[in-house]
Length: 105
Image (cartoon, rainbow, N blue to C red; front, side, top):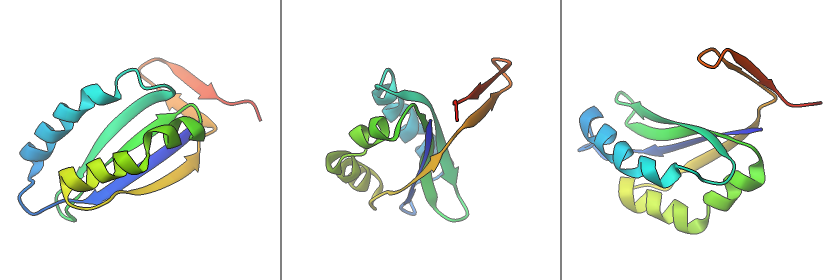
């Protein structure tokens, strides 16, 4: 599995309420995306940063979404292009589901 952390600077006029509204509006676009296990939206008021943490089945699945067109959409919507970082994720502890997900080494 792959965790992608996506961050982008937010304009001054986007407060927590407006960010939540924008995030809710985009959430349906991420339903049933091939390979997306989970997405968390992020908002940091102090540093004016928004973004998301995504858990993907593979890096290829993530890269199929983070296209130049998707990056342009983020830049247009929030005012700056996103920064994307990838992390190999071999173990996930899910307390709600009472499961530990682990990839074979």
